[in-house]
Image (cartoon, rainbow, N blue to C red; front, side):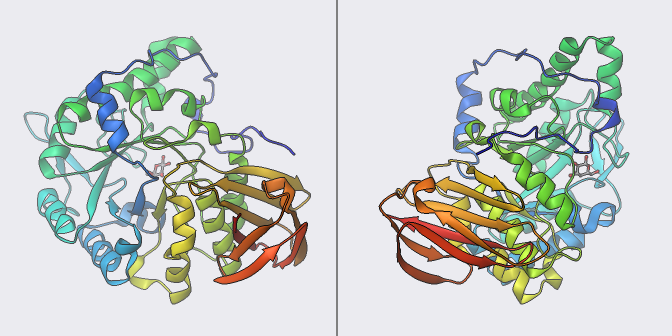
Length: 408
Ligand code: GAL
């Protein structure tokens, strides 16, 4: 049993940010009533939706976002819970003479786009940075925080991803090499935007993105963060996806209703992930109570991808109202067992095979809270397994997973 591995081990770090050290919380935990009201009603379960970055990256247009909204409805994803349609980087244009941010030619009318998305029964998200430039070198919110928050609210946005990007060099300069000061500056910048969002009076989910450096799980909730990235960027490879997913052990105590660890957006249906790898990805993310932000082109999805993304019983594990993040139970060579407690007393269990070949995996039921046996359901097979006693052994394909729901 191994409960914690440094989350950032082997993770890509932003160079501008590498030198910062973990520090004590610099901003008091006390919140105004207004701020805590925002966090407690928003993201009561991990946010679900779609984000443009993983597939469209810098090419995303207004039409792509409308197509994604249409597809969320026509495929049944909206009704399965995927509500947020999030525009990532590269929507920004110039500021006008008063400093108001405008969208660029790819996004002719943000208010009209937000209205369109809302007309489909969905919500819409936007992206910015505390620095002067985003990671894609578009305009960030530095020095314009209140103005930008007001603009997002005026346009009708419901979600903001706030990505560190070019703020790193500013922090380095202003902190003069003092890591504690650096940490205070970063937290103050996220706090500033949160206050600006709250001041708009519009409920806006606040998503922090600073790649998991300096343990944001320890301080982001107090700054009104509804979710915070715990790692560097995911990509559509089994190695990267599992490096991130399996490094989340030990973080469960920081998550709960209104505030979630975010191991990054889904790559299900992207790249060359095989069906078994997609099942591993989705199984792990639901056990982690991770935000489920699909990152594929929803208009080109295969039935197999859609089936994985919309599996109701898998989603129910992620969205369980108790809001407990799962954790690792055991790790033996390439075999990992993870579990997550659910509100009705059930326990979800994932059996993962990281090996290049199929392997039998044995689950001792006593290790996941069922010494007297359990009724079991195999989620991906959609099959009741009856009552299990002692040990349950199942063949798990290479890079695959078995996801169980166990009941008393
Ligand atoms: C990264 C972020 C990605 C994406 C990208 C856009 O920093 O982690 O998720 O938002 O910037 O430039």
